[in-house]
View 1 (cartoon, rainbow, N blue to C red):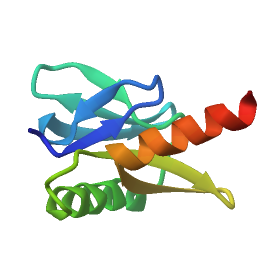
View 2: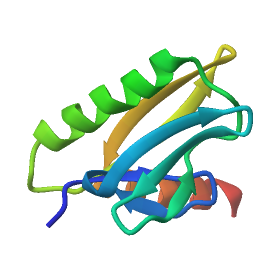
View 3: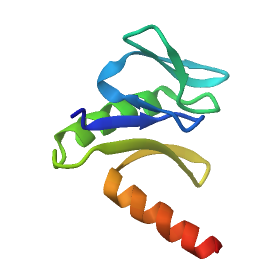
Length: 103
């Protein structure tokens, strides 16, 4: 099983090991996959440090506990974009908890 996935702005998931190119533009950070598909990872232009931080987050997610798939996502806070990863089990729990609060 592929352990690390990246969540795109349209809520699709892309395998981290399929990313071959990261490109930053005024429209945001995009990634090209092995198949040539271009996916958008952020909505706004990012400093190059955000690209490097994503690479580090992929490495961290791939070296984490391999019993669970990891999802890497962009998190905005205090006007800065950062990356974090969560296990799929944790994300499911958070989604179910959030849906329970909305009911």
